[in-house]
Length: 376
Image (tube, rainbow, N blue to C red; front, side, top):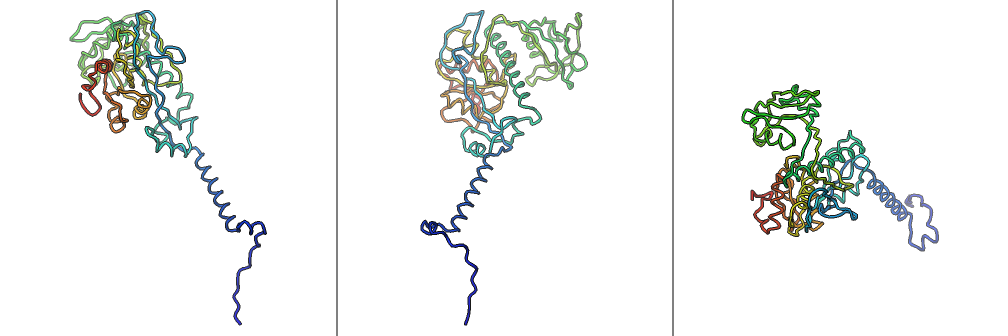
């Protein structure tokens, strides 16, 4: 007689389990599934080394925030206007103090206008969050000061300034010639007689007309005595000269301009601040009632510089119903392919061009303006 050897049976299901159709195998599967779910959940909630850039809110520089005008001008006539001039912002998560988890990263990959980048590409990992915040606040303060000086100059004011040298570029001609604390009082070139420097524009105007590699005579006040320093200039990249000095300017504006904004940092709102000041201080409606957004740093002499996160800013502007967007010329490579439908992007390189663009929008001739894919 043949016998078949079978494995020993496990414990029989209880009566209740039999009636419910529950078997040990199904219990094991359920427990395995729950364990897997919990593990996946833990993985999704763990911080990961990525940063997420997203579209931030926009702010109308011609409007109010909590009943307080964003820009206030005291000491000069101001005029009613319409339309909107919106500065744009970027949200950034994932840096020191603000970690992101895997779930947020996955959502960022699929969100329009968002970008997921390695955290070290977005942050200096050796810098603390407090240091980042302090730097951002200082950049915003400088941006507002530059915007005020550039705007007031644009509408015809002179802004007196004491230009103190705070340092120099070791690779340029001023190194070893100037000293920290020198105050610039004049400048002369082979082509121009000596010009007294009482505003930043006095200095910038002479240098802008001076070819690179020119030896200029810079008059400085040092320890109560005026000295003339011979300096070979560098190239500003636009046919003019630079001295290679870092300035700590002290301005005395003839008009008091105040900008009240909180929880926004960095230098990229400068161009829109300047346009807002100009619009308020000039008769008429510069925007013609349109909603114009934009971005870009602003220098004291009105050059518009590139910024980060422009793709996100384009989506933020579009979300807040902007019709036009002013983009720094040096950001055009990042603009192409990232423009939401219905938003017209205009390329600008200076405050003069930005103002002309807004006035063209009001006049209905925006179609003739340069974009990031055409010369105009």
